[in-house]
Length: 206
Image (tube, rainbow, N blue to C red):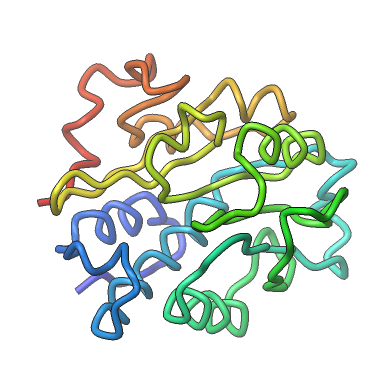
């Protein structure tokens, strides 16, 4: 069983990704509650390896909440799991506030946006607007990194990994720690991650 301990965040993420996740984890399925809980933990853990520009997220101002926003169709299981995390976890000493927002909002006040399906706005116009506000974008939609998203949760059969579009993150002023890049199987629009010689050895899940 995966157990979280401070100082072992990378091992924790790897443990979650290597857990057997059925196809139902990525669909609306009442039996996928445990898988949605794992996905919520991965979203939270990935955020711990990202640094935002001080103008958008000042770690010293702990009274300001870290805003985790949900866009598009999000399963109730994932929403409830993320809501549970906000009650016990924090990001860099900031409490987490979970928000559901509409893609049409011109200037969303978010630090991280998890993007689901059935969006009313195409990614081609939504992502640049989010990135202008230094918002970390993450999704499990197909080809999310290729569309300009920052972190994509990828699934091939029952294998789960994540890919990082490093260029998109850097252009928005976000910094992703090297430890996370080493674990990532892809970076810069799916190209081989220059930080590791064996990009798929650690992140594929059987």
